Image (cartoon, rainbow, N blue to C red):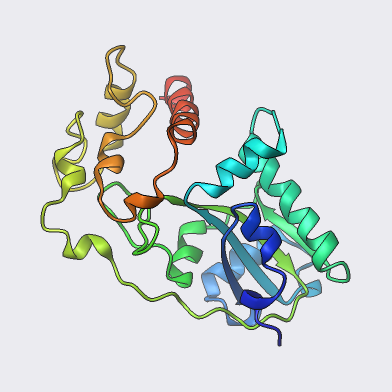
Length: 234
């Protein structure tokens, strides 16, 4: 088997899709395997599940360089990049993109299996290297024969954080109980004078991986979309 980490990863890394984990389908936990199987009737055609994410600022830079201008530019950029990667680097391999898409598969569960995801009071994952400044971008079924990835080491950064600065820096008090209260957060973000309309001050305050913090434009893009959803549905 070829190690994914040394096989034509430059194209994905250059696009900022710089986090990769490979799972053998026959080694997935039963619940995860069932959700994947439910999302793909032709799963027998494939051998592996490839989780692709981004960490840090490069993905946003590459997106701007691509010129993509759409209602969902990050997903569109990711889909175009993954398809081009298979076409150019793995032209003989069959693949099917489950995410972005309608498949109901727990990305955070896969992130935990990969060693990327550890819980935080914010209810988003934290990684010892990237902090909270990473995201899941694609999940792909493929008939590849890469070596399966081993979980990344590093542990849960929040366990050793005595100050819990994220809790102290939330202007809404949504973390006052030690865990994220969505209702309190949503109500505050909708206020006209909210300091978190286009950012999350609690997340920004976390020191873990702060050197990888997204640029202001990416943060504003993501939180503007989430605020739109809050105003529409909550």
